[in-house]
Length: 286
Image (cartoon, rainbow, N blue to C red; front, side, top):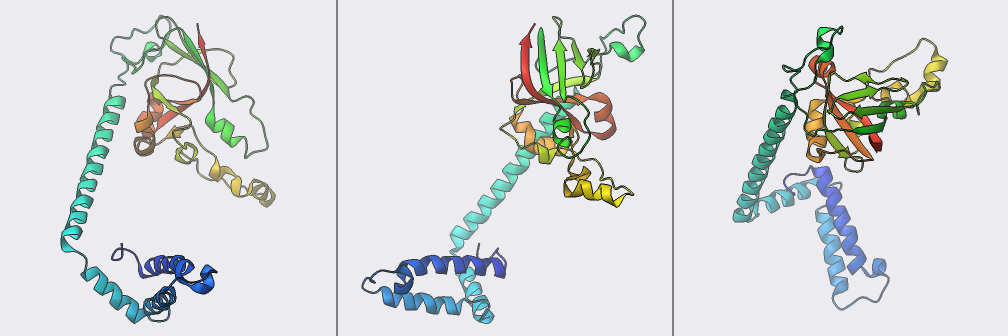
């Protein structure tokens, strides 16, 4: 640490150590009767700090630092370097493993060699994912749209409820009733990936942000202020952030107070982003 820290940071550490030791051995600071030899230790501490004072004696500070680093036990130092290399290799291995797992998770979203379009519908309307990691049947999920819930705190107009529903019938077919809609529609392009308990990850900082918007009217910009569009969020997360912060918490199940993630085919193919369906707040068995 002595060799790695900057001079300013190392001196800050030394000052903190000096103040902590002074409270123990200095008679005036400790506010008690000094023990035998404590006065001498207080003088020694003050002299040592003066010698290491970067502000008053930078040459001595640098000389003692160089001497201290050179005295490091070579065996312990080599062991620390070996441990650092081992940790770096382990981190790289874990990152490759996570990347490979995510590749496998999203690459098999294939859109339906066995699916047959229904009569009178466009060719792709009948396509369904070939597989899902956790099949759900006879189930209805109630979710809160996280982006709407967040963004409504920052604007002065209302878009209605932020509640949506996802339905699974006896065959596992998924239909979605989006926010503000009254009917369910077939979810031909959505593949669920899993859930993450809301307490396991701080999700808001990880979600994508739309570009900041500025208006010609200064008063409108002033009313939006620092908490305006630049802080709004979208219901999507980049692959890199998902892998780094979410993937290790992903579960093949649904439970209340959990975030539900999916792969939305058009969104994923265009931008590589994964989708946050919402926060599960209700689970009904059909």
